[in-house]
Amino acid sequence: MPELLDLQAFSRNEHKKFAAKTLIKVNVPVNKKLNVPVITLKKELEDQKIIEIYRKGKELRFAFKNGMYWVFI
Image (cartoon, rainbow, N blue to C red; front, side, top):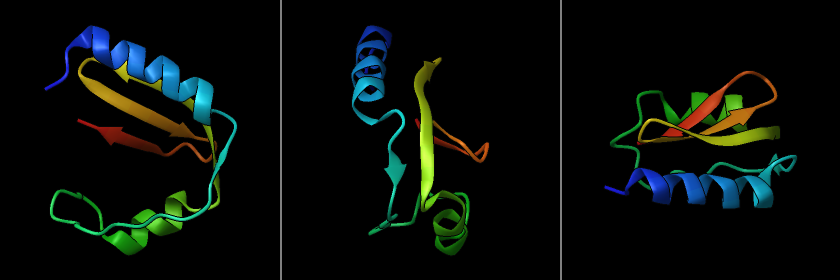
Protein backbone atom coordinates (compact mmCIF):
# COMPACT_ATOMS: atom_id res chain seq x y z
CA MET A 1 0.00 0.00 0.00
CA PRO A 2 1.38 3.45 -0.89
CA GLU A 3 2.38 5.87 1.82
CA LEU A 4 0.46 9.10 2.37
CA LEU A 5 3.25 11.29 0.97
CA ASP A 6 3.37 9.15 -2.18
CA LEU A 7 -0.40 9.47 -2.60
CA GLN A 8 -0.23 13.22 -2.07
CA ALA A 9 2.46 13.62 -4.73
CA PHE A 10 0.61 11.28 -7.08
CA SER A 11 -2.66 13.19 -6.65
CA ARG A 12 -0.94 16.53 -7.41
CA ASN A 13 0.70 15.12 -10.54
CA GLU A 14 -2.51 13.48 -11.77
CA HIS A 15 -4.50 16.67 -11.07
CA LYS A 16 -2.10 18.69 -13.24
CA LYS A 17 -2.33 16.12 -16.02
CA PHE A 18 -6.06 15.25 -16.03
CA ALA A 19 -8.08 18.06 -14.40
CA ALA A 20 -10.52 19.68 -16.83
CA LYS A 21 -10.17 16.70 -19.21
CA THR A 22 -13.11 14.54 -20.27
CA LEU A 23 -13.19 10.80 -19.67
CA ILE A 24 -14.17 9.46 -23.08
CA LYS A 25 -14.46 5.72 -22.49
CA VAL A 26 -14.43 3.36 -19.50
CA ASN A 27 -12.91 -0.08 -20.06
CA VAL A 28 -13.15 -2.63 -17.22
CA PRO A 29 -11.16 -5.79 -18.04
CA VAL A 30 -11.70 -7.33 -14.56
CA ASN A 31 -14.74 -6.30 -12.51
CA LYS A 32 -14.29 -8.43 -9.38
CA LYS A 33 -13.61 -5.45 -7.09
CA LEU A 34 -16.29 -3.10 -8.41
CA ASN A 35 -19.21 -2.32 -6.14
CA VAL A 36 -21.45 -1.29 -9.06
CA PRO A 37 -22.31 -3.02 -12.33
CA VAL A 38 -20.01 -2.16 -15.24
CA ILE A 39 -22.92 -0.77 -17.27
CA THR A 40 -23.74 1.68 -14.45
CA LEU A 41 -20.11 2.75 -14.16
CA LYS A 42 -19.92 3.42 -17.89
CA LYS A 43 -23.23 5.30 -17.91
CA GLU A 44 -22.22 7.58 -15.02
CA LEU A 45 -18.58 8.30 -15.96
CA GLU A 46 -18.23 8.20 -19.75
CA ASP A 47 -18.12 11.64 -21.37
CA GLN A 48 -17.82 13.36 -17.98
CA LYS A 49 -15.33 16.11 -17.16
CA ILE A 50 -12.84 15.52 -14.33
CA ILE A 51 -12.94 18.55 -12.05
CA GLU A 52 -10.53 17.48 -9.31
CA ILE A 53 -8.14 14.71 -8.29
CA TYR A 54 -7.22 14.59 -4.64
CA ARG A 55 -6.20 12.36 -1.74
CA LYS A 56 -8.53 11.64 1.17
CA GLY A 57 -6.94 9.41 3.77
CA LYS A 58 -5.40 6.51 1.86
CA GLU A 59 -7.79 6.94 -1.07
CA LEU A 60 -7.19 8.68 -4.36
CA ARG A 61 -10.38 10.33 -5.63
CA PHE A 62 -11.32 11.54 -9.07
CA ALA A 63 -14.25 13.99 -8.85
CA PHE A 64 -16.45 14.46 -11.92
CA LYS A 65 -18.64 17.38 -12.94
CA ASN A 66 -21.85 15.32 -12.50
CA GLY A 67 -21.04 14.79 -8.79
CA MET A 68 -19.74 11.25 -9.14
CA TYR A 69 -16.41 10.06 -7.69
CA TRP A 70 -14.04 7.34 -8.82
CA VAL A 71 -12.17 6.13 -5.73
CA PHE A 72 -8.94 4.11 -5.69
CA ILE A 73 -8.18 2.37 -2.43
